[in-house]
Structure formats: C-alpha cells, structure tokens
Length: 211
Ligand SMILES: [Zn+2]
Image 1 (cartoon, protein in one colour):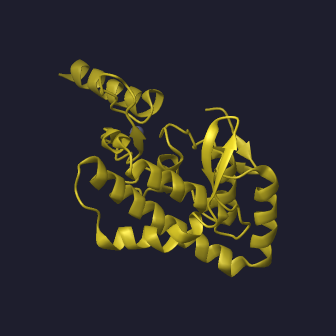
Image 2 (cartoon, rainbow, N blue to C red; image 1 turned 45 degrees about the horizontal axis):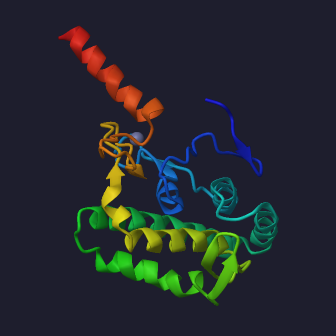
Image 3 (tube, protein in one colour; image 1 turned 180 degrees about the vertical axis):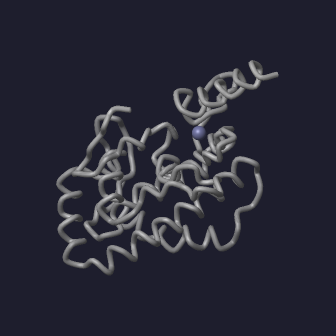
C-alpha cells in the first residue's frame, strides 16, 4: 500500500470510501467488529484527529496547524476531545445503522450527537456564491473544530433519503466500515473492493479449492 503522510501522520489506512464525510469519520477504526485481536484504533491522539480531518477535507491546513499548536498548549483538553470524538463516532455508527433500517436511534446516542449540534451550526448565514444559495456556519478554532463539519455532514445524511443507502461492509473479518451504496442496482457489498471484496473472493476461491 502506498504511504500517505498528512501532517507527519501515516494515513495509509484512511481510504475515503464512505461517500460522506460523516461515514469516513465512522471509518476511523478498522476491524470494528473483530474480537481478537482488538480493532485498529486510528484516533490515537489529537494529532491523528487533526491529520485525518485535513486528509478528509474537514479542515484546511492553516487551521490544522493552529489546532496542533493549541493542543500542545492544552494537552489534557485535547486528550478529552479525542475520547469524546471516539464516543461520538461509535454513536454515529449505531445511529446510521438504525437510520438505514428505519429503526429509532438509541436515546443516549442521539443525546451525544445533540450535545455537539448547537456548536456545529453556530452563527448560520445564508450566502449567495458561485454555486447559488448556501448556508454557511461559523468556523471556529476551538479544539472541537475538526468535529463540526462531521456533525453537519451527519445531520445532512440523517435527514436525506440517502440514509437508506448506508451499508455495513459485508466482510466476514469484522471490518465494520460504513459506506453509501450509490450503485443504481444497490448491490455494493464491500467498503473497498480492493480490500474486503478481494479478501472475500480469495476465501471463496480457497473454500472451492479445498472442497
Ligand atoms: Zn470492509
């Protein structure tokens, strides 16, 4: 796999295959559903959160650098935000699965989302730009800033019919990644054909050889 480095962090794992920023955020843990060895946590510290957010286009580089400086000045606050980001991520994972199946979300998961929501949509303004009418929000430089675009993306998806196209990767290795199935036939089964799709095919091939 090609090495991808963003702000000094190796992001080779971070394939943006979710189809939405919020789903790519959900996919910042690998093998989520695997029991042994434990899942591959990629949000290990604030620097990895900022590097991922830059890679995914949630924040730009100047803001990323500013946040990295802030985090080194406030390490305890930054560490707490990483823990909260991981809890929020798992809440989003469960909420999207529920939304895709038209089930109500867990109350605690929705409460966690809403605890961040007001901040993520602070100071809304209607703009008229090159793409026509749009709504824009305050872009703060608080340590929570990388999460705000993720929350807005999540709300947009929950309110759109596309929520019914959210799929859980069918890998039997416990991948646990989510993606939007944008195929017309609605037949996409794997987060990434190159990774989980090939693995499933290789296993079927092996089973055929053996049997
Ligand atoms: Zn997968």
